[in-house]
Length: 109
Image 1: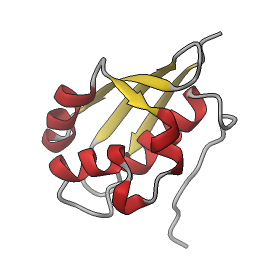
Image 2: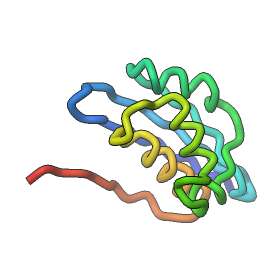
Image 3: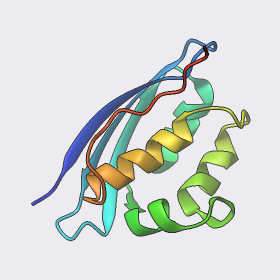
Image 4: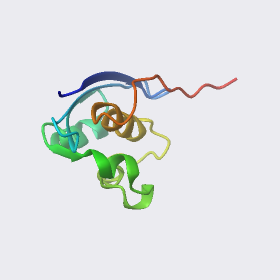
């Protein structure tokens, strides 16, 4: 049974919204993502990632420095505080059947 998740990421002050649709494979070993964004950097990332198989186990368990999904994001996203890479990992986690869908947030108080 494949798991599909949809999420929206509001990146903050830049004003860019990113939409992510992620579908886990039957064996949960990979996730296919479709990413849509107004951000020119995320658009470049989407060209590479959209429709390809992302290794869900690596995405949620590899250290940040060796995580293939995070490494791919870093090739296109120059701003380290961008929340989109983290959101993509969360999408893999949920679509890969390794976590329940639950919103996460960063709030200034």
